[in-house]
Length: 322
Image (cartoon, rainbow, N blue to C red; front, side, top):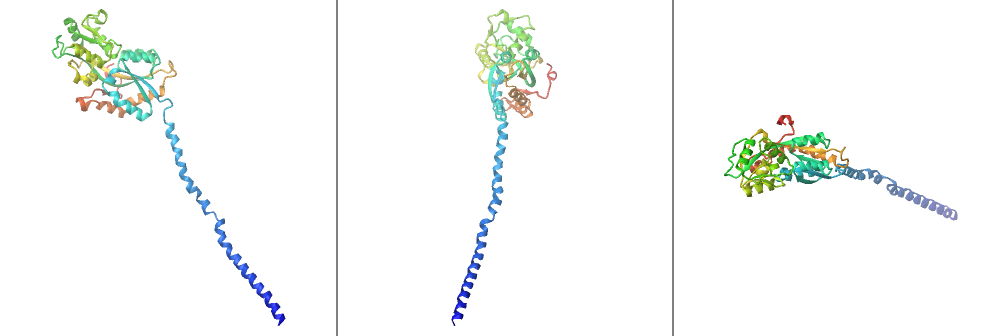
């Protein structure tokens, strides 16, 4: 009986030990998920979207290195309202900020010669040719044209209606009728002096009382002519844009000698290395781009029933008879 009892106790201990071992081995699977790596294997998928922002520097790099651009231009492009349409378009498309200086074409070219402008928009072909041959300009592109007209009071005291430009000027001088001259080295002033040169009259030199020099832009000169009941030579665009405020009629028009042609010119970096040539070329390309040319072709039609300018980027100077 004592022998049996001794045998039972070890047996019970053995069974208890087996049970504990079984429980320990059963617990190991519950710990297994802790050592697995499903979370780590998902990390690349969560990191992938962070690659997208790397595209942003590409857009930033497209911004101009020097966004400031000085445009010296004739007053007619400003007074007509054309630049109020085109400059915001150019700035939005390219990122450049344009400082527009509206003066006569001669003064605009002087700014280029002095390195005080990056790009020019002018309408004085003979002076432009000299500007380029003297090395002040680097690139020159035909942009558009309209025409000059001779306007005056409806009563037309000098009786110039439908005469040719030179004959009209002769009649004005003979009648000593008041004539307003810009006298500002502009393309318009150059054209006017060229017409006087075809007559036997030189009022710019003799300074008769009827010859009124303003030294101002086209818009201001038209206003003065209207107030004084005087004749003047104007580009058509500025006249049409100001017509409602003027007491002036178109009396002479349509002559080939009254063609008014505009070019864009970049200032030569060989003369002025610090000019913004990249910006100047961007403006030249913008002005000659087909989309911009289409805007130019339509400008003024809705308000005046006719375009104020005619696009010419697909033509040459020879095509226009220059």
